[in-house]
Length: 105
Image (cartoon, rainbow, N blue to C red):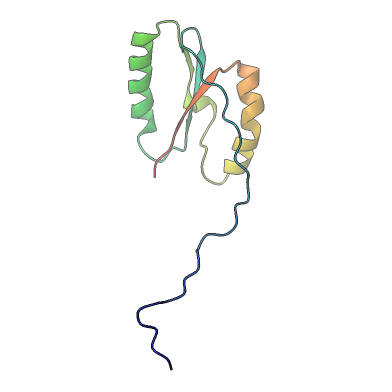
């Protein structure tokens, strides 16, 4: 065996990228008069967080409207794939302008 003098070959542990970067949707100039959906994975106090967010955003934008996370169900778990696949159509049908997605890590 030859000594390696502290040098070791290493390989990057990540695989090749599977999805290309997409352009982000343009930001809304204001939330005034907008309908905002709340999405949650039901893992960490989202119910409390969304109450506080609603309170703060309504103080700033009195005519903002919210669609509760209760309307969408969990974005995590056994039905996650189905819930997320149905989401774009549901958001369009409800006239949602923006989404706040809450998740626990």
